[in-house]
Length: 161
Image (cartoon, rainbow, N blue to C red; front, top):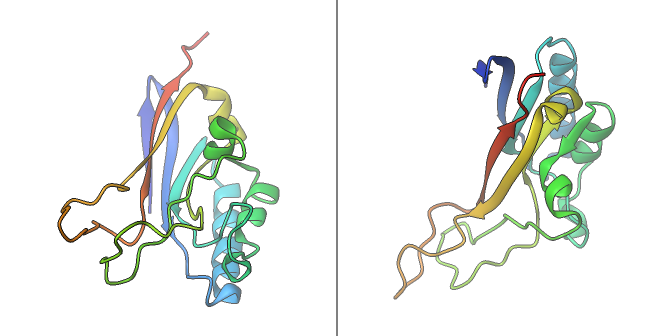
């Protein structure tokens, strides 16, 4: 999904995606190649968010890594906002038990990402980035809203010069 937006008189392309799981890396990587090819044709600065299903953190289980994250950084020339703002801090967002009945989060992966191309990154003067969905909404028998936590970013765009 993509939408063209205008923020403080600056046009921007906001893209949201949800790639195939790590269980099917060939399909996920084909989707990633298609996504990169499409973004390279765009004329507007890009902010891209989504569940990329490719562990971006050191220490994730080996079977949760795919080439997708590296492809987006290297060939798509995207920057990872979490790394930009938090360095190597964990930022884990995945996963609760599929039945959402986990007593506590068993997160070991950072697969929910906010990425920006270099043009969009130069437009941003400040980023407030936080993880949401890490508190159960029912305490006596914990319940979670999703099998992932989420990321929320507030971007402040630099004034035009």
